[in-house]
Length: 350
Image (cartoon, rainbow, N blue to C red; front, top):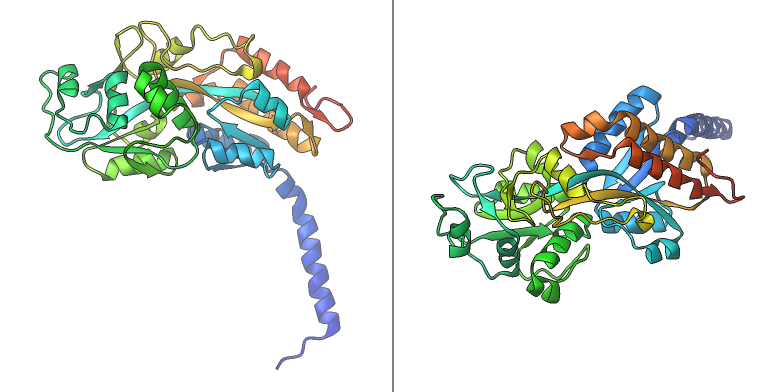
C-alpha cells in the first residue's frame, strides 16, 4: 500500500480549499430560479444573452409551477416562477412578492394523419368534452360540425395532459371552467386536477413529446413548444364566436382590458376574454421573490436581470411569440420592487 505523507495531505487539502474559495466569486455571479415550463424558452434565451452582456448566468430549472412555488417557499432558489398567480392571501402568508414578466398563449396541439396545422377547428365546449371523456372519436359529430369538409378519422382520441403541478394546467382548466359548468363542477381549476381521462406528460416538453409520438393524440402546450417542435395546432373559436389564430396580436387582444395597476399582486387571468381578435387561452407568467431577503445582493442581481429583460428582451420575446409588457406597465412592475427589502428594512432596488 502506498503511504502518503502528512505534509502531502496538508498540501492537497490546502490546495483544494484555495480552489473552492477562489472559485466562489464566479459561482456567486449565477442566480437561480425554478418553476414554470411555460416561460422556459424565453428565460433560456434571455439568460444566454444576459450572460454574454454581463457575465452573470442564470440557472433556471423548468420543473413546473407547483414545484417552483415550493422551492421559493423553501428558499432553495433566488426566485420561483409560476403561471398561476398566487392570491394576495397566499402571498402574505408566505412573505412573497409577485410580478409578471411576459404574456403568451396555450394551444391544442394534435397528431392526426393527413390534418395539417391550423386546419383543425375547435371550440371550448368540444375541448371540455374531449377532456371529460365525453367525446372519444375524432369523427364525433361535434368535431365534424366545426370542420365541414375535413377528413376526420374514425379513431380514438388519445388525450394528453400534464402530470406535474403546472401553471399551464391552471390556465387551461381555468378556461375550461369558464366554458363548461360540468367541467367546473366535476374537475375544477388548479395547478393539478384529477383528470377524467388521458395520459400525463411532465412539463410542456413532455406533453409536446407525447403528442409528437402518439398518433391521434391531443394535448395543451404553450405555443412556443408547438412552434419550435413543428407540432400542428388547432384554431379556436373565442368568447365572441370568432375563429382566431395564436399570434402576438391575438394574445395582446386578450390582454387589452387588463388592469395591472389595480390588481393586487398583479393577479390577472386572461382566459376567455371578450374581443373579436382575442385568443381564448392566454395568460401571463409570474416571478415570486421573498419580501425580506436573506441575501440582498443576490436579490438585486435577480431584479437587475428582469429589468434588463424588460428593457432589452422584448424582441427576443416576440420572436418566440410571447408578448412583452409595454413600458407603462413595466414602470408599475419595477415600482412594486420597493417592497423587496433586506432584513434591516433597506429596499433592495433603488
